[in-house]
Length: 245
Image (cartoon, rainbow, N blue to C red; front, side, top):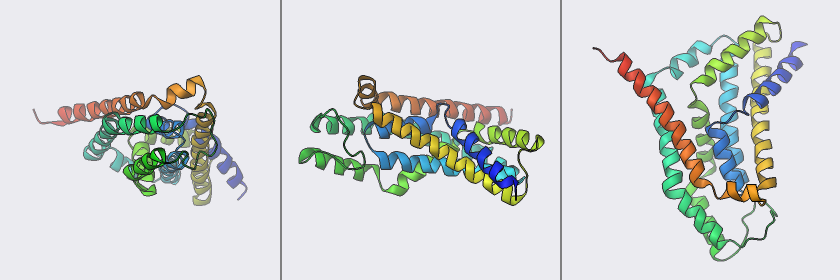
């Protein structure tokens, strides 16, 4: 049992730093946090952390091949890629207009009082209520986090390589308790980075750079759609290569 604290610590560090590289989840979380939608941002973050936890749990106990069968399935990959493309287009075509109306109706106080509580009254409050209803319930944001976390085909490969390195150097055991502690630490570390990203975004959202981020919904949508196009192109190329000649 002495290896459990080490496995937990290893997972915390690996999860935190592994979540830093830019990707769909970071873009979505920044977009929500820049509009002070903290709950939505954290729900997306939780979905992404659950994906990392599940992958690490399977890989650490030697069952990564099960996830590999799912992750390499061409139809699963295609569905996830098309979801990301569609989500980006939704932001560009629909969400951007709604957020522009909200920003126009909300008073610009230059401060952030309570990021979890809708500010303003009258038309501004009505627009915020309409926006929240349009974006869906809490489960939808959580699902978006899961899907955006799962869409990256390199995630399973990266965690497999890291776990293999850790096991090979005696830092991690493949026993279930140690693997479970590592997976839990990874999920907490991943969520910790996303929570830090939310806090950083909230701190700068009313400064010049933060205002640009808040108004960059179009850029966020284009970035997410770009990720979707990239993964869709990869998937389409695989279909062509596997087609009978």
